[in-house]
Image (tube, rainbow, N blue to C red; front, side, top):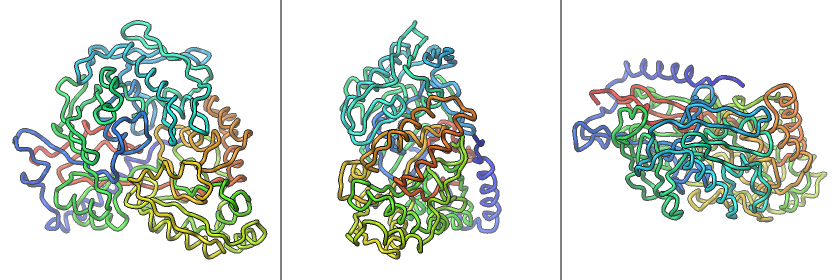
Amino acid sequence: MAPTRRRFLTGSLGIAGLTLAGCSSSNAPSSSASGPSASAKSSEVSFTFGNAAAAPTLDPSVTSNLETSRISAQILEPLVSADPDTGKPVPGLATEWKSSKDGLTYTFTLRKQVKFHDGTDLTADVVRKNFERWSKNTDKEQVNQTAYQAIFRSTSSDGTAQPTIYHSCTAIDSRTVELKITTPYPSIVKALTQPAFGIASPDAFADHDKYGSHPVGTGPFRLSSWDGHTAELTRNPDYWGKAGDIDRLRFVTVPSTQKRYYELLTTSVDAYDQVGIDDFVNLARRGYQIQQRDPYSVAFVSMNQQSGPLSDVNVRRAAAHALGRSQIATSQYPNGTNVANDFVPELFKVGGDDTSSAYRQDQGLAKRLLKESEYNGEELEFYYPTDVSLAYIQQPEAVFAKIAGDLTSVGFSIKPMPIRWDDDYLSKINARNSDRAFALTGYMGAYRDPDDFISPLFRMESPQFGFSDPTLFDHVHRAASLPDGDERSELYRTINEDIAEIVPAIPLAYPISAVALSPRVTSYPLAATGIENFSLVKLRKDA
């Protein structure tokens, strides 16, 4: 897999911003002591980050939400962390690990003298209780699968429990944990780097209802308060590692792209995510740093085969050939975003990309396919999110308008179904509903492996796509069990070809996302996943 391009992009953009700043420094707002980042105590350093969406919970084990993961990752730490440049596992709460020859047993050695925010000691038994909790949560029916369910294959298409590759987690002694699985999964250590596997204090998660709003971990920050939109964190004075420059860390929700831009200019935030397309030049002219992340997500249009006409593959192929995906990638995403020809971004690939012809725009072909299909012009519901900026779709309303226009131009009749993101959009497009035909959505990666994208989408039947293909599902499971190499690469190539033949969805783009930083930030630990470690943020001493 290719190494990240993160530093090259960051460096080039940083230089451009500094150069422009020299020409227009009078336009840059100063970071005065009266701004919200300044503390009532002159010695206390505060930092405010603008999230593009609200976190539905602060428990990362029950959701794949980016904002939940970003906040909770400052509080909870996993056994293994991910190197931000390569994605390779590096020590976290475990200092070392080893696997058995058969790939079924993983042994982790824990750090010494680590305490949770409530004073509980980190022990192997605590880790065991966390795995027990994740396993038990699998038994709870829910529309959106958790990271645990995806990794350990512990849920079926209807949300109920099924045989899992998880066997056990055992405390060998106070600092040694043994994890056993029933089927080889060579990527499991990489998978455990996700915030979803952050280790929590058992006393805290004993109260399940309270834990979602007040997680307790070992991280560099402790949670002070959260009201569903703003999270207030404070430095952990007993942190085992280096605590960093920030004493108080705030995450605020600012769904509007334009408002996030002005919040930075007025020093209401010190940094924000999902920089709007129109704001790149304006920020650079004012001397602000803009750091771009490598593509770590894919945007796509899902097609529900339980919805009447979409059971006909010619209808789905007509939709795929109707879309001008290159225009969408260039007009609706930051510069550097590439058209997606399958569902795996370049950083995750171990196989080739041979599926571009399946989705190329050819409206003449789309019209012929539609004419030869079972479609009779009936109105088709198209779901899309509103009031949100996402890593994979910054401007959902604009992207939907372009797609709906392309579909209409070849003969589709589209019924727009706008749904507020806060109204649990993901649950609505993942629920069984034969009236829903299309949905605008995407997937954000969490660890550097193609299984992270392929398995959650195509390892089993899903109400979002409404199809069953046992051969494809078997291929996905087998690919996950193989080590990196030619056999695995060839199998993923086959999987991509199979998906392109079935056309359960139309891949749109591998989006670039960006973070804008105030002048008081001298170093920001950009991560392609969007899950930065804020204890590593460096600030000007005079800010």
